[in-house]
Amino acid sequence: MPPKSVRCPINSSGLFAFLFAVLLFPAPALAEDVVTIKTRPGVTLKFILRGARAGNLPIAILFAGGGGDINLDNWDGSGNPAGNFLVRTRKHWVKHDLLVAVPDAPSDQKSGMFRWRTSKDHTTDIRALIKHLRKYTSGPAFLIGTSRGTISAAGIAGNMAPNKLGGIVLTATVTRYNAGGDKDRLESANLANIKVPVLFAHHKDDACDVTRFEDLPALAKKITRAPKVAIRGYSGDGGKSYRGSECASKTAHGFRGIEKQVVRETAEWIHEIAGTPR
Image (cartoon, rainbow, N blue to C red; front, side, top):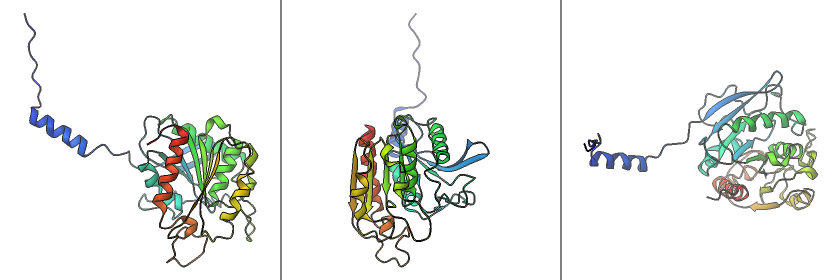
């Protein structure tokens, strides 16, 4: 006896409409969340998590400058918890196929991470963060810092085994001590122990007194064990209409007016290093 035919409950016109809708409106990346994890005894770390959470997407961990506190305890989820270059551009990194995490200062460093960013405790916190992100992707982790966040990226890379990281990106790097007594700069990190690719991205017109573009070539030569070190200098708007501190985020120091270009070209470098070209 021949098998009975099975009728599809969706007719051809309905199937066409369904497929058209899928193509026209692809599933969005999962919503932005604030996640809290335990990192050390009695210590927690909050971070913004944004992006698709599957496959082999590279991880981009974005470190804010200043004291590193981006106020996630009081953020209601709208807009930006801080105006920092990396915090306010996090959605652009996601558009370039990266899983993005933006960590706040840990619960025991809410007064600021000054002279703490190169510590073993900071490395322990970020190691725990990367372990958590492994639930979502097998891709390599890249540490991206801006201003004093570059000290975090370099400090952790100098403390961590190279097989745990894909590379680091240093934007608006702190190359000099300031006059305010915050005695840390990129050289506070163990630069000679960084063994992953390094990219410097810096606005040539950055007029902040502690982040000088002209210092980068000599600084790059001190990263002696990295497989590659690149320097990219940018020019452009630089927030010429902005009035205020030259170290503020909406000036050349924060790539004002060329944010999307800097993010796009940096993401291309990350995917090249990760072997996931787009």
